[in-house]
Image 1: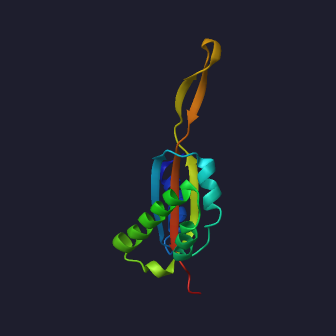
Image 2: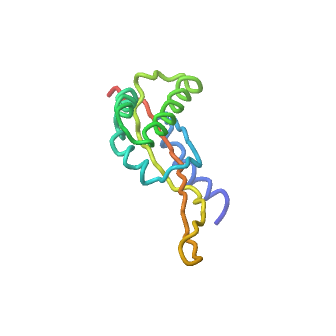
Image 3: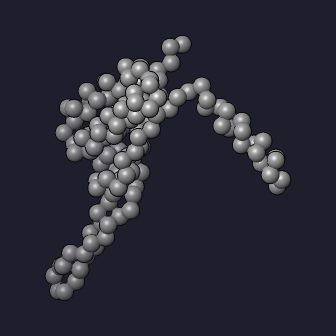
Length: 133
């Protein structure tokens, strides 16, 4: 394929997202299973940031504190780097992807060993401004 044709197909894809500002924050290699974090984040998608943080305050899971930390980081990114109004931010998407797994062994009966998998997660938060349409 000629380089000029490839560039034409890439440019419109970039142009689509110009009107919408999206703020990201990531926490990588967090020592918690992604499944445990996904139980917490299911409640938060689409909510305003303040409502999401209030909901996290009353969740007893350990993952709630970790997700709260990432959301607060994304809000700080929005106010410091982009100069956006924090009150208009909405949690557009949260994902908990698997990170590398730490493999450990535990001694068992009869000289055997069993594998212990210590899972890690990458938590990603995407915020966007609430549309006033």
